[in-house]
Length: 163
Ligand code: GDP
Ligand code: MG
Image 1 (cartoon, helix red, strand yellow):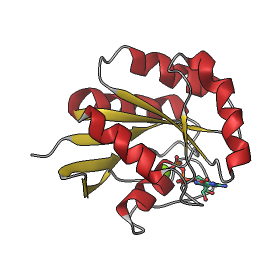
Image 2 (cartoon, protein in one colour):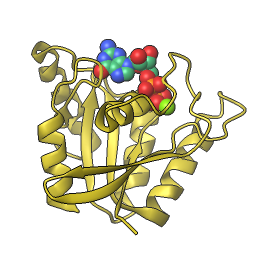
Image 3 (cartoon, protein in one colour):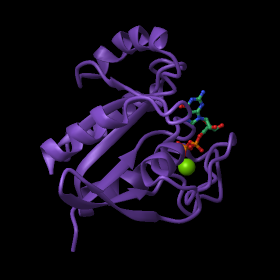
Image 4 (cartoon, protein in one colour):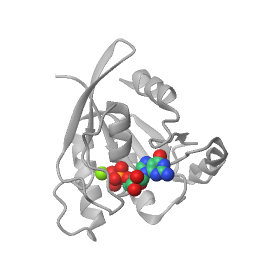
């Protein structure tokens, strides 16, 4: 089976949008409401002569959208059990919120390669906001925009370097 790259992050940071962008088509459900991705969704990607499975598990089976911790727990479990590489996603426009801190701490313990990615950097002027994320302990994030399709090459380069 192929190595799995799992997208992990609190609801609404754009995990499903990132997934669809990298997949090149709309597979995962994107919704402005938190916790709408009901199923675990995977797609096989080919880049730099390598194949891997990209997985979006955010919000999977969530009934109670207020139970954000349960959502994160589920994602972390998938990451621990299956991922070769984890994409830890935050929202450059929201900045650091407490749930990002919780995800950061949980991921630190799993001992897998983490790529720290700040989404919603729709314009290069937002990239500087990424500096605020330094305090999560993963260095500066790679700033991308799923909506404006910014940073795909850089992101795939990081993934390939860790597969
Ligand atoms: P998820 O809960 O982490 O899977 O997040 P979604 O992919 O469902 O996206 C949550 C919201 O953020 C939706 O309203 C998206 O349209 C929006 N969004 C996702 N990516 C971007 C982006 O790059 N820029 C902006 N401005 N909005 C985005
Ligand atoms: Mg989603």
